[in-house]
Image (cartoon, rainbow, N blue to C red; front, top):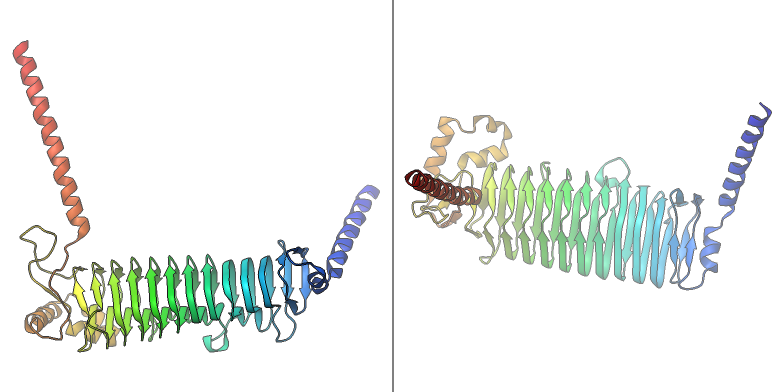
Length: 426
């Protein structure tokens, strides 16, 4: 029993000494004492304060290293310097976790940010990379929250592989030149990613789920939205993607699923919506005051209440697949023989009154839709696809079946000839 007590006392003494050592570590003194280019290792512990970096160093924590802001100032401020790296640290605080301004060369990686108003705020900086950062905001309404990652008046930015939830805007970008936002996941926020007054931007392979709007693009020029998954934005003002006053945009290879409106284009020009998969949206594609050079081509529309709608200044539909297209392909070239007319009086009503969905596919609705297309297919302002594509998969499967059947037939023919010749010889 005495030995057990001694071991217990020794263990308690070790833990007490360890915690005392960590508590005595002065983070700011270590930062101030470091020479440019050095690594400041912050041991395990909870450090309260508002720490400032103004020289090119690396702050490196380990599992269990926490910086906790005091008052309204950020936990970590980085300013007027270059070549800064911060990694493997947990940060929290009442207001902002990290604020960086006037920095050339900043890398934030493997950070855990929680219980804050705003996660990362970057301004007037360049050559910034933010990756593998998890940001979890506070409970409450979006108006009471800040952004997960926000970048202002900066250039050459990469934001990738981050996970953000419960904030106002997951990634907010304003007045930025050359930015790539890729492989991030944003959930349960207002906007997944919000671009404003930005040029030369890319949003690639991101996942946006259960926000009010997945991608909000405003007053932006030259942007690529590719291979994103945008789903379950079903609030009254919910959009998968909303582009307002945007010039030169490409939207392609995205999965846009179960949104109130999949993609909305407003007061925009030269937008190409190409090879996207629109599934089960109330309205898949909507245009208001868009230019004639805006085109939706080679997309797949399945399970949507309304395929496409626009005002008098409509966009072009070219070579898309529509699951409600009733034409046939007599020429066997993969395209329907009659145009597809994107109009549905009942669909318009159902978008406004979702309870009408219970009457979908009823005889009266089928008759109304047929009359719509007969009456409106010659109207100038109707959205018409003159080359509707039949299901690509069906065509490919048909070709595969033809090849297989040919090979099987050839094999049986040769086998029969061989058996016949063998029988004669015997």
